[in-house]
Length: 322
Image 1 (cartoon, one colour):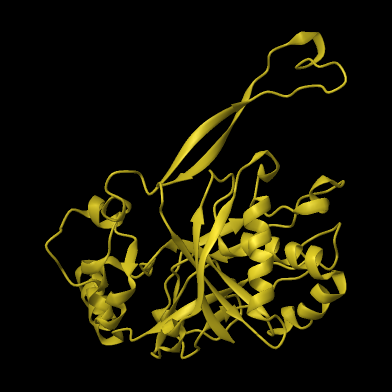
Image 2 (image 1 turned 120 degrees about the horizontal axis):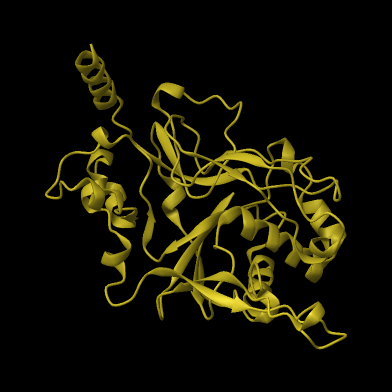
């Protein structure tokens, strides 16, 4: 699979966070609408048997990747000692990947460091009201019953990068760009029909980021590592239960909800020599759309984990506990 870096520039607020598994699902719908259902079915052949045709990362600030979820004692001490401030250092410059991994936290940036004058990302509540299109009133008895939904705003003129691993023999990059451009024009995620989720594609190019080697990897999207042969002693991750919903026409049918899926959050670390991606395709997630799948794969960046440092720290903690 070939790795691509795609730079996006948001043009409106978003109703749904720009994350890999959700974007993968919407790309599948966009491919179906542009090239037909048979094209999508051919692309998805073998997806749940370890043969993905496309793997999509979360969106992240241009030039940065998420700081891996490693134990706090793994990081070498720097000038900053405040734990609250250290927790906010979540973005690692790509240039820092060449440094020893235990030093990465010293190079990591917070949202405020990346966007000084504006919040890099901020949530704002938007008020709504339901109108009965037959009576032109809010509800029975003309009751005023407003409700609110959050909107996710990005810093003005900010650019975000999405990494995509692609099997060009199944899906050429030009067709992926067409599908992604369709989403950018029509809108991504919730409330796209009222103007949210629009973006422009700034650039799309191959990236050497996935050619790195090492004894461990960290993920650029949520993943399903269940049952895979990772060394648990040197794997670190936080879990999240995803309660997915169908999109497009399936969203307005009788049952728009998918089965919950337990996933490892973005930035998970797994001790393995595997390169490019980890995880698995998840099927049988829907009662209403039998053929539906969920992206349980995640693009990964390989790196050299200092396992001796972790072993020493583990022994030190055990001794102090005794």
